[in-house]
Image (cartoon, rainbow, N blue to C red):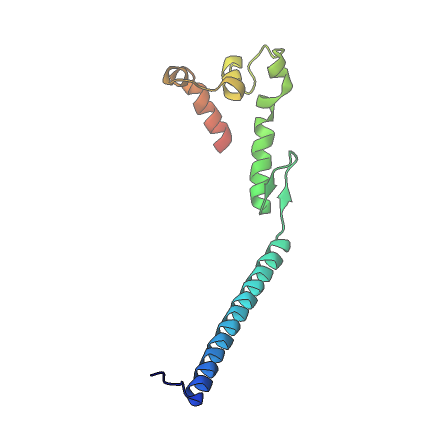
Length: 131
């Protein structure tokens, strides 16, 4: 025997389902709205961010960082000049041997023996940077 579903039960289940769908739609809309607000705040904050650019194109967030970099760049600029790469520099530059500068700029220090060999030059470079 089949029992028919009462009309009252059908209407009640439809209303409950509709309310659930409305709440879900509202929750999705609120989530999207909050996401758009946070995205807008992030973009607004990054647009108003001031940056400082050095001579060589390096970018910094503050003027003090730029000044520190610029002073260090000016002190170490002779180490990376093209005269050294061409081999025309015969005398030490800023107190550094030509072979140390060559290792520093191109070859690197492949082993501990090389680092120990140039330990005084490395100390001199550290003093130059930290002065």
